[in-house]
Amino acid sequence: MTQMHMDISVFQKPKKGNYYCGDSYYYKETEQGFICALADGLGSGEYAKESSQLVMDIIESNTNASVEQIIKVCNQKLVGKRGVVLGILKVDFNEKNYTFSSIGNIGLMTISSKSEKKRNIPNAGYIGGFPRPLKVLRDNLLDEMVFVMFSDGVDSLDLSSSYFLGKDVSKITELFSHFLSDSIKDDTTLLVMKYNA
Image 1: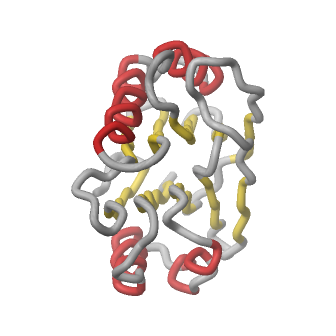
Image 2: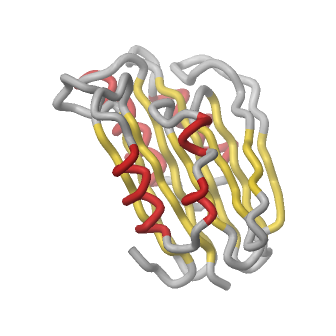
């Protein structure tokens, strides 16, 4: 799907044997920037989906807040609910930079127009009603940069595939889906986003 500056394609599939996928995602583009979030509820099934969707609803209501503020609000709202792992990417079109933070195993890989891949190592743990130390990555936004955000159903071997160096986001998710094993052991979500200046 093409927005003003971001092309987006999403692949999502529940763990084998489950109807509900415990992963939820949200994205929105404005004239100023873009936000994308991915949460994976602990465990799997309906209760995992409930927690991850709650976090997306909070993010949808707080898109102008900083990544740090959003995670703080999500943490407060998860008291008494199943926890989630969460990754949030914010892109600032005016400042030409991006911010990413992740708690738990939501990963981010960036690929430059020169096919240079960088992986972000998330903070361990999950959010679930108690404060967590945050590591926030800030970096420059480059034209034709591809962002790949993924839950733990995607492994390092998948990410090393040469098709991730392509520039067509739909083709990347299509090939990922084609090569994915039928018996996936976890809920799987892959969001592929390309920035066009």
